[in-house]
Every structure is written in C-alpha cells, then in structure tokens.
Image (cartoon, rainbow, N blue to C red):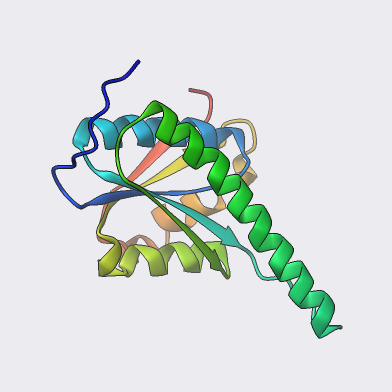
Length: 154
C-alpha cells in the first residue's frame, strides 16, 4: 500500500485528456506516478465533441445531458481508482467542443497552472494519434509547456 500524504509542494498540475483507449490507461498510470513523485496535482479533462444534430431542440438537449452523464461516469471511475491508489489533488473538467482546440484553451488558461501535458501514443493504430501529430507539428508554436508522450503498450 502506498503512503498517504495529501500535501503538495506546488499547486502546479499535470493535464491528461480522458478517453476509453488503451493508450489512455498507460498515460494515466504514468501521470499518476509523476504527480505522486513530484507532489503536483492532476487534471482529468473529458472533451465532449460537438455533433451537428440540430433537428429537434428537445432531442438535442437530451443527447447533451446523456453525454454529460456519461462523461461524469467515466471521470468518476478514474477518480475512484486514483483516490484509492494515490494521494494527490485531482480535478476533473468536462468541456464541449473540438478536442484539440479545447485542450489548447485549457493549457493556455493560467488558472489551471498546468506544467505538463501527458498523452498516450497509439502504437498499433497511428491514425489515433491526431492530437499528438498536431501538437508536435504545426501547432507546437502555440504551446509553452512540455508534452510527455507515453507509449500505449507500457
């Protein structure tokens, strides 16, 4: 059992974008170890991607509520695991929008005090690495912090 110590040396955070991929699990485990070791916090970000469903307002609002409930359920599952196994501050965020734009907005928000973005790398499906490709390619100039890329097969 790990030693429980809820004090943090800094109020800086690591950011990880939550999804249901295998590479996310590897990245989350790595992020938890880093947060514990460095006495920093962790922000779990779940992005609900907007869909172009504008036919019936009532149906759209029900769909949005169901998406939010699903996001809360997924975040709570990961939060329970982290709180059981580690002792550092964890925040959860649920945002709507395009995933890459949302990540950049969160990173550039000084209130979040993010010092590192941790992403999982899909080894067997390179097409799943669009965010990594974008952030290490043409959008790297918009970043002012390091990115840690964790292979999904760890």
